[in-house]
Image (cartoon, rainbow, N blue to C red):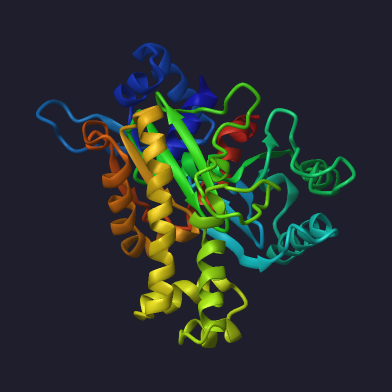
Length: 387
């Protein structure tokens, strides 16, 4: 019960006893007893009376944000990794964003481990302050077995969590990047209080987090949400999975980058060619060009928006969600891709079904993965602070 209360307060700044009882489906006396014990332990604080709703004002309780407990989150994508140390109030204590680490490199796991050691050392935090380490990464991540089956067993990325636990002696949890992004949207973004939500992680590939009845849906073996590999492309381009016809080859940031570079090679002018020389992150270079009105960048982002809409039409008919959220790195150009997404939905969806679902662009952008990874730690390990 105490751990449940702490988790609830991690996601919600303050709650009254009535709110907590309702959210946890527990009786008021039991909640009151546990709240009083947590207050005595100094883990939560009485933050005073809330606003009046017509009756007697209730006390609001929140986590004691002066406590020294910290969360380490490692948000990994195919080309970049971000390392963050945050506290229970979600404030960032230390961070290294978008560190270039290509997961195709043989020593990628060793580089991630070294960067993690460096940031912990530089921040001068003590081991006893750390609640746990969270890892989110693309691929066939099995959070129960704590492995990534996208990599062979002799790869350091297959059992990255184990190396971190052994090296730092800190409990570590791991999950798929798109599931963590979906959870961030559910708790902090556009998915709050929405029962059935699909969260699309538009990045180098196209991931999907599925929320049904307010809970993450993982599927029978934990691999639900492989949206990238729905065979909707008419191109013969080979996908990263080794198959042809996957949505990813036409609906990802990688696709937009490749098309832009191809246009430039064919004599088209784009300011992207200038930006990419000073910004090694090609996605950021493309996004910057598009925001400045570059027609080639805008056109190619529009193309992936249309293909994304075609894929979304499939999801609408199968899952009939309340809302679909475009999140991740690509959400930053949501105003460019949204019209083309809608064009495809109009073309490929049954109107009666499509109009029941809202399509929204996340305001969390690429920060969603870090927030969801930190929440992964809080969700699994926050009870560590009780003892």
